[in-house]
Image 1: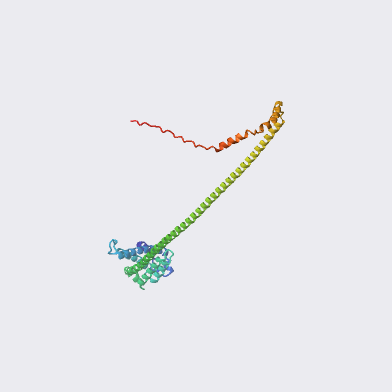
Image 2: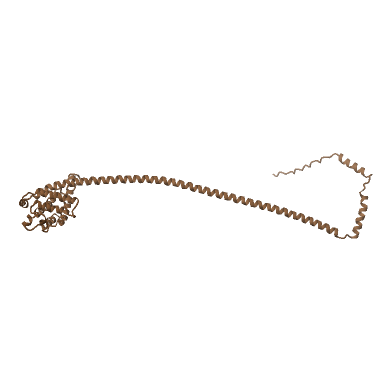
Length: 334
């Protein structure tokens, strides 16, 4: 990636010494495309960031059990080569002129394609390059020590990255801690809500059971009242029927008595109306004539009858002897 950046920067370098001496718009107007360089530099900075992260982790875990087997010296060596290529491209592209390099790098670092951390590193690199350049353009072009500049820039870059990584780690740990606390609080709140819901459900269940029991009791009472009313109605109907039967029996008895009276009256009327035979009439008349004579008692015969009655009344009563039943003799058999 460093080679790509160097090629991009060198590819747009001006082709004559006159254009190298020129400033401002003349330098940018010779085909240098800051937008393309900004994208390329942004990608290189990502590589530098990864190298710094690897070195920081390797440096922190060096000597610990299970530490990475990656050579920690590879990261700064790779960074130095990449950085030297980029710095030399800026020096040669600007013709060794500090002002031209400043104007060009300002244009590169303010492109829309580079922002945030990348823009900050772009400005830092620009400042480091211009601090390392002298006022002698020729000396800059011929003897600029890019390796020395990149060594110092690596130390600064690595320190910044360690701080950034430590901050990110702290923020990550704080975020995790906050997430854990929020999760614990949410879990606690969920437990509290679950307990409250359980109590609410239990209370609602009690209310529902009490309501159901009340409704069942009311329904049972209503059924009992209905049965009582039915039985009373049945008893009343039975009583009314009994009264009706008694009244009907009395009416029937009255009709029976009336019928008997009518029957007797009819029989008597029939007897009076029927003609009697002559012999029966004569016999009845004779019987009426002889009846007084037979009814008169004889005086002489009255006394013996009275004496006999007195004798019967004064005669003692002899009690009858009880009859004893004979006990049968049972012969014993040998």
